[in-house]
Length: 445
Image (cartoon, rainbow, N blue to C red; front, side, top):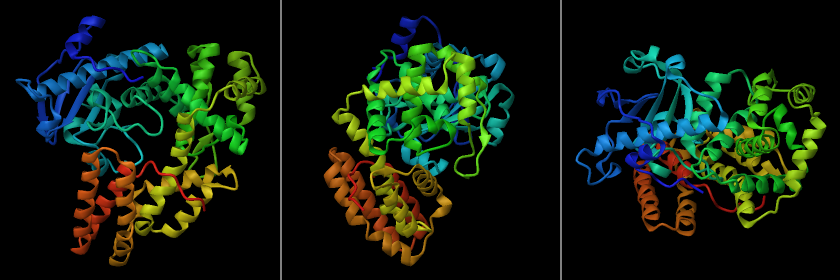
């Protein structure tokens, strides 16, 4: 269940604490900066009026107040879930950069496979002037498609995006160290779901359905994901599910003790920069929870096998598989290794098995803009995909306004291609595919 929107006034009255701004908004370069108790909010200065609250005497101030209230509430909720207090005096305030739309966010950050993300502070004069007061990690987000107007898309499963990213900041700042991506992302999935004003454990039920289908299809040892890497989409589901299982039985404090001691070891695969060994897992489980790896595996497997698979669970599972396949097929004329990527995408799920190494390679490759090229021949090939995208829009996009927007963008892109404006065409076409090509059943290879 999503949190219902609460106005700043209502929220402050309920929780009894203030998020009043410490200074008036200041325009700095391309941003409007707004300081609160534990955040520096950077809002893109050219936010269209329709994205601001209507009927307010000062719409920009009203939006900043809404964002500030939301951020402070989310941080307090994540702190409570993880029992990790965050001190801005000790670690610096958290910078949050918010673009006006998903399209702006993707174009400016080149982050196509993420709804929001955390990275080091940008090296700009405006931000560096405040660097001593800021945490080294910043959150990047946008105003589109979000509960309470801040965050990002929901990819496959319902996630609260800003609490997810705030968890990463607290993790990197207060715990640190190299950790398997499965558990780092899983901790953020767990905390963001549990930080709802009305926690909805059904989110983990859906995750468990997804994983049970995966287990039954391939019969893998999901615990092996702690020793390496897997498809991006599976590490979120498995990590969140496993940590929820751990916290329910042993407490989140016990998990964080285990997590804090866990250190990654170098792996040979470039896409998997660190992992752990079964021996290390067994040693740490015995040390922190008094259970062997075998005992933990058995208890977790029993949870999954008792999970009833619903239509939503099946849809979530299909979603994960389909988005890899469809995006590669649509983008292959612009990818440097398009034909090879299509072959690998078809092989990600083949012979009744899921191949994690292929999925990781494909998702990493298509998210890197350096792997796209532009030429008259490749643009001509890409134009052949327009009918497929039009078909997708008419069949799978129910909202008439969104469908019209996709069709308009396709017409504009076709004009760019015919005018020889290939770089603009590439940017627009890749953005369109990543924004909309997310749910369609794949033909069997």
